[in-house]
Image (tube, rainbow, N blue to C red; front, side, top):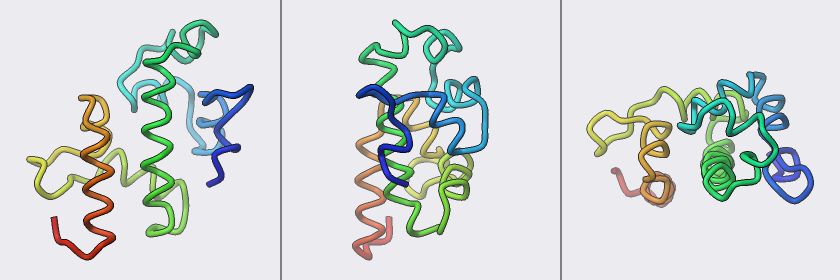
Length: 116
C-alpha cells in the first residue's frame, strides 16, 4: 500500500490505518502496544512514540504485502505468524518490545534467500 494511504497532515493517522486494514483504532493501538489514548487524543497521536510504532508497523506491512498479495493478509501475518529464530514470537510481539529493526532484517534475509 502507498504510504499516503496511512497518512494525514504529515503524520501516520491511526484512523486511516484502521480503515485500510478493516479494523478499529483500538485494535491498531493494541497491535503496536499502545493505549487507546495514544490513537484517540491528537496530542498523543502526534507523539514521537506513537508515530514511531505506527511507522514501524506500516513499514513492515509494506515489506511483506507483495509476498502475500494483500494488506489484510500481511496484517494477519504480522499479528499471528511466529518468526523462525525468535522463540515463537510474532512480528507484532517484537514491535511491541521495540525490536522492529530485527523484524525488518529478518524479512530482508528471507527475501534474499537466507533461511532464518
